Each structure stands twice: as structure tokens, then as C-alpha cells.
Amino acid sequence: MPRSVDEILQHADALAARFEDYEPSAADELDSHAVAALRIAVQERSDAERHMIEAIRIARDSGMSWSAIGLFVGTTGEAARQRYSDKVA
Image (cartoon, rainbow, N blue to C red; front, side, top):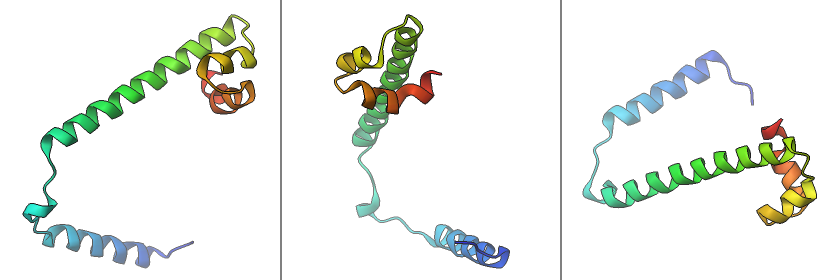
């Protein structure tokens, strides 16, 4: 959906005004322990995915087939190839 520069600037101005006029209420506050737990979980998932990609890269470099990799990661070889082939190249 192409937009003109004027439309983009108007939208940016509207967002800036909403931000500047925002007054948080007690209902808007987030539990800091829940936020911390979510941040940690997201970081751990990201770390695990990086480890998975590195392990798959090592497996592919050693000649392991996508079918064998799929067995280890709990999916089919084709699904593993589709998900990881562009990340391990």
C-alpha cells in the first residue's frame, strides 16, 4: 500500500502526539517479575535456536543427511531442510 510522504508524516505526527499525551494508569503497569521471566525465556529460546543452527551446520558439514537431522530435531528431513537450510549455508 503505497503512501505519500505527507501521509507518512501525518501518521508519524499522530503517533508522536499519542505518545506525548499518554498517561499510564495502574492497570497499564506490568508485573516486573513477569516481564523479567519473559525476557529471560525469550533470550534462552534465542540461544537455543543459535545452538541448534550451529549443531545442524556441524552435522551437514560432516555429511549428515536432512533425514537424519530431522530425526534428531523431531521432524521430517524435508521440514528440517526447509527450516534450516538457508541458515546453515
